[in-house]
Image (cartoon, rainbow, N blue to C red; front, side, top):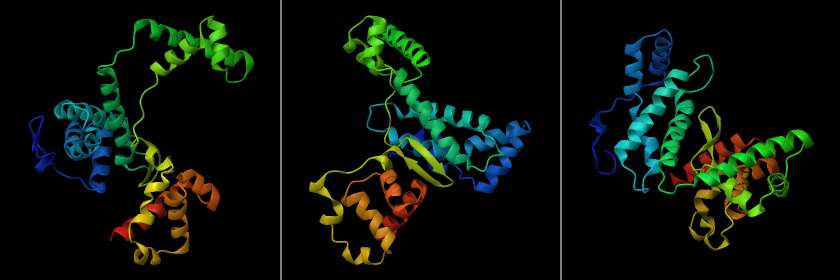
Length: 254
């Protein structure tokens, strides 16, 4: 059930099948050999994955049926393009593909339209940027781009901003096996008035953590540092920081 709704696009979401990893791998091999039946079975077996992804886009006033259909397009693309020779879980590859497809749909159907003149300026600015970068072997400044086009700096800034796609806090930026790092994980928390480790009585739970886990949580939630900053400070990878942080928080919740 999803938002008290059982049917999406005529699909009874309460009866969607769930495939095990071994089943997915076997079906993917058959798909690569041209088995259309296996392809259909793999699509149906991953519709719950699409359902979990579109939950991230609720609250925008979008039709859930439309998002589900767009998400299915992303799922199909991920099945057709997945490389079975790589040591990557299918879901790790498919989720960003599904998210990307939905984001493109939302961007293309956004009620806020950018004028043709601003788009033209943006394309000219991008061309000027590439030309200057090739000529000077350095990244040109906005002023240099404006001077090249002989237009005000403000026009260049507005034009370039207009073609930047919005970024979701739940967009994956790195994945190490089953440990995915999202944009949200790289954002620090500098809100000193609402540090939840100070406000919630968790002393007994925290005592059960080892010193490195305590140190990581302190840096992340008391000092508001990003996972990348924490990894640099304690000398381990960001993926390891993410894994240790999630494990510590899970034990605290339990």
